[in-house]
Image (cartoon, rainbow, N blue to C red; front, side, top):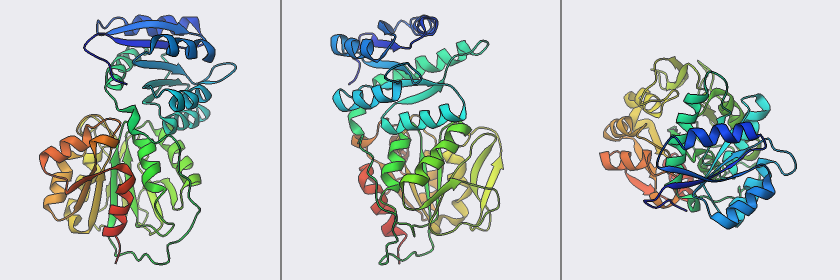
Length: 343
């Protein structure tokens, strides 16, 4: 569902009347956004969606009765709609946030707090506008689980895989890694997320895909069968100068992000002929500049296509700059990576 040239129509769902008023007031500061209804529970939210067909929902994860996750799952099956989730930034809240993203939420933010409410609402406004343009029908909402197994017919040729992703990336990564065997090539991933969410993402993926998935640790040797997630925070995920180990590089944001895909790809340029790189769904341009450098250095480079990208931003820019060998549906990315990493 996409908004037209008219105002973006939003339904705000939260059991707290104070929070609903805060979100409404913040969104309606922008003349391009209209809050058409509020709902305090899943039943009211369902009725509002049916009656008003909004362009975007904001949805609280922690609600009484049917919680936000249950409602989100039902909504995405019955009437896929862009959803911005709100969650408490606790360990439990982070687990729920990653679960929401895997179910199809466009993005998930911490609830506005005193002193930071304006910054949070500015971000929500930005996300609502992006969500209204998103391809929610690009997602496959049923996570495909595969048995843990080693592919005895697959032999690693020594090449490393790097994947960059952002908005829509949780489900895209699940789709790619669900086709990975337990003896997959070493794979480094930079996904734009807060550190708590990244820890929850690594833990979740580790339980549902065949390879070992974990947060990357500084200095560890890259091993077959392991997927390394950038921990974020104050560091970027890098390949060290030897091309054999992880380096967590403390540095400023790059392309507006930390962890940054450009920073990760850039660290691998000296070893480009040993790299297979993928750039998946996401807003902005992070990764495009250094994917071009990798491509020029001899790396194999693939981008997620527009039809299966929730937000065709990062892969579009990479493709337009000439850094992508080919674009593929998300369901074909793993095959591309594994073919080029096999003997």
